[in-house]
Length: 323
Ligand SMILES: Nc1ncnc2c1ncn2[C@@H]1O[C@H](COP(=O)(O)OP(=O)(O)O)[C@@H](O)[C@H]1O
Ligand SMILES: [Mg+2]
Image 1 (cartoon, protein in one colour):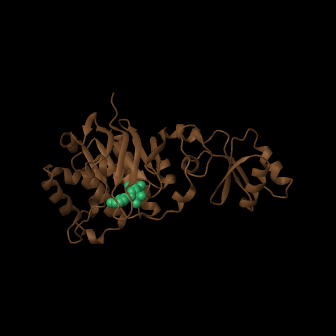
Image 2 (tube, protein in one colour):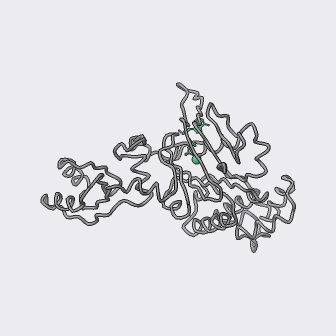
Image 3 (cartoon, helix red, strand yellow):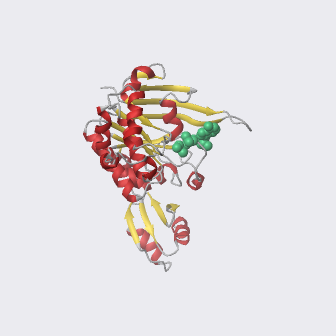
């Protein structure tokens, strides 16, 4: 069976007003199988929105191959569009319309039967607020209204660009339940994020990108295992000093936030020994199994591993990019 979504060698260069053109997407690959929730992960500015806009025909690719349901896009965009629901740019809703009216107008415009409005309001948990004006909705409710608008045509593939942006933990939980419910009905869901902890809990598979290029992909468990081969997270009082000591002692060490990661460690007791003789006491010594760490190892300060291209840490300090 061909994948629901396939991207191979995608290239996209933005023409900059100043200076030379810059490749935002640089030979990106992505593959999503049917019925999965697929996480599309990367730091801010790594090219997630550009990829999704290009896939949906909103931007022109400069090279590569893309297919949705086995049909090449953008050439066959018109044929696949009725089967794809997407929110890539936050839609602007009229505050003076109710949720029900908003969706009814969108249904009419999209040639979708009006009965779908009640169905999707129920699906996103807005049925009891449907008559209230959108301006009275919380951000989480507006996000769910946006998802409802993408669900109107009962798509087989749902694509959401950073649906958790700006949501509080409760909103994130609601979004997660909503996406899981769609996947349980057989829908394929692609959801992008720059925050891993949220995605890790709902995705079956992931594509991790950095600087417009795929650095890891596959089932979440497999991607986790990639970073779990002898990598340990170490917390001590002074982690910079600990990194120095362990590096001098011959270990491969990267500093990640308030802790360090020691790579390719055969025997973790070596770490407590090496730090202990220097008067440093280990507070935590644990195998790296969180996707967040995998993400850091694959795209950040970790050592070169197989085909993955390490990049410097600067990606991680980048604030929001203008999109
Ligand atoms: N319209 C644009 N013109 C020029 N550069 C852009 C434009 N949109 C995005 N970029 C650049 O392309 C890169 C990828 O951006 P984007 O796809 O928005 O990343 P993400 O969605 O992962 O945060 C960034 O370096 C960004 O600054
Ligand atoms: Mg984006």
